[in-house]
Figure 1 (cartoon, one colour):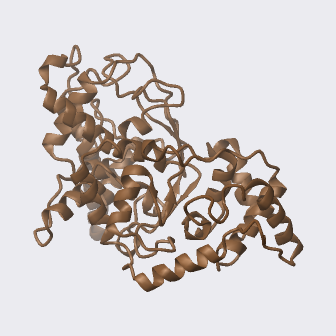
Figure 2 (cartoon, rainbow, N blue to C red; figure 1 turned 180 degrees about the horizontal axis):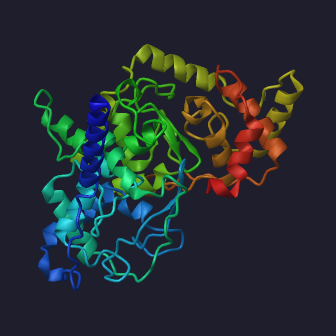
Length: 430
């Protein structure tokens, strides 16, 4: 009995201690007004604008048709829909009443000014690596470089038990490794700068790494092994990359700046607004990011590159002798491709053969289907590489996708074309 009583007492002590630890955050007093613009130097504001762009803050904190940074964007997650908050300097509905101390705590520890835990859709597990200088600059820009907007974003209401924010203390215990960033002394300055930006403000792993059952990013061999975002398949950035030609550092620089590389193609989907912000970044920073990301890639072997290019060019659509499959389904796809796609995607047409693209080699057809239905609105560095949306029936699109996979790759057919197209058509996918 004494042993059992001891276990119970010990359990209670641990429980009380855990609750006290989880509830340790107090509210930080609010400011009466946002700091005046003349509080900050022009150099700090300019640096803050760059770092805010590096963190993609505007991308997530702007709803369709809404004013920049005013929040209200619906983010679908496996646990329910999360609405982003207003981070303009409006005192009533934004963060105008937040001090730098409160802002730093949110960035480093995922806790808001009032002491409430933030959902990790806000990638504080990455932002925690940010230096004090960069956090202060971002704060300055949000307070003095962004127009205040009085807008109350919808309240996030997740189902039980995910609506209990205190439970995030346990999640943080498992997945939040508080910063700031610690350089690797065995690596050079560029590699460390790239690691700082990719792992920190860039938070690339938030989309490009798979999540475990409770929403934590997988590490080890699964780091950068691909994920899901906004109804798109997000390709791997490591040796599991599906790109027929491995990514070199130079190819990554082209893509990160312009959203286009001659051996990989054009960006689309959730990556496009990120590229728009990277377009304005300092060259040294983008080169550093590319150098860091290149260390996760397969080595580039010129013989294999030549082989991929030769195969892709051989499979391009030739208007003088178009493919004539004997399989009726593939024949229908070839006919529809010739009618709707071949005007651009043909020999001497678009500068990149389809067989060299990552999308055609992905494990499902969602991205190709979405690009076909929605088209491509390219970022600033590749304005001449747009693609108009197709007005097309589902059965015709299915036939085209079946044909494209067979014609431009050596991979197995996509397993569920009807399901992939339905997922893209569904309003919830947006």
